[in-house]
Image (cartoon, rainbow, N blue to C red; front, side):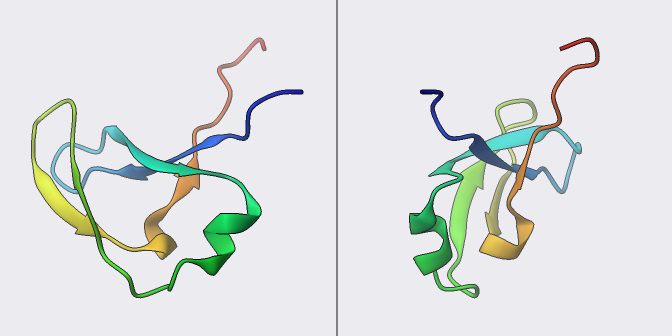
Amino acid sequence: MDEPELLYVTCRSCASPVPTAFRLTAAVYEIDIDQGHELTCPTCETVATYTKIDFHIQPAPVGR
């Protein structure tokens, strides 16, 4: 069985994908929608706070 999709946010500074510590599982639905999660962009190193509403999965590359 495949591992659940990793959830990402989009960096507010450089628009790069930033991985979160969360996967697309039932546990994500238990996270409070207003709870802030401080994440650091691996591309530009900007630190910002995101909420669950910012979470998304990365689209699969074309040809997969």
